[in-house]
Image (cartoon, rainbow, N blue to C red):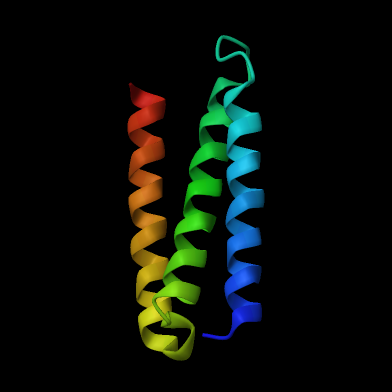
Length: 86
């Protein structure tokens, strides 16, 4: 991994983490509760994808990147379903 791609991945994680922090500061009792919860999960999924593709090197393997994308989508969908039903 080059230094440039490491810095880009780190900056992406910082920006996504800042977005998550901003979403969590919104009052949870508002009518946008489900959208806020979904937004937090989407940002968590994007952060996981950055870590998997950049730090673990899955960007070099199309098969494994797609497999982890599917598994991540299924996991986050189940988590959102539990959040909605709970």
